[in-house]
Amino acid sequence: MAIDPRITSGIRVPDAGNVIAKFNQNMQNNAEQKRIAELHPLRVQQAEQAIESNQQGIDQNRATQRIQNIHQTGQRLKPIIESGDIATATKFMLDHVSSLQGRIEAGEKIDITESLETLQNLQAGNSQQVLQDINSVEGIINQQSGQRQSALKSNAPIVDPTSGQV
Image: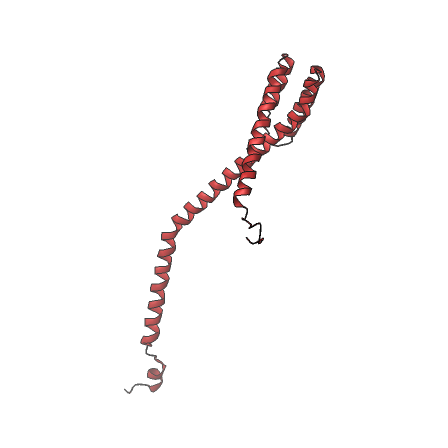
């Protein structure tokens, strides 16, 4: 029995170059996957650090905004107390606390501790304590503003007064 020539012509011999190239590509893919797996914990750590840093910034902004809000309320309240009209000052704080509670009920995250303390001091007749608290907040605001101005000055370019060059 003779071998049918169609059978032998249908068989292809594998190309060694293609097989080696495919093997090398698979090895490179495996090495890349291994490298990515090794970097994953570092990326997770970097992401966690970024989240923590962002949260600290958010917390700092909230604290700054809170102090500024307390300061603004104090600046509106101070002249009323200094005029001796404690009843009007107490009504002002009652309205203010009521407004803050409405915002809390609407979903805002607001700390009203200082407002409640101020209201209690006014109701107890401790208007001097309220004025001291208002002045303390003024000091904090002035200190913060001084620090910002100092930072701006230290980052400002130095200009030669005669030539005008930086």
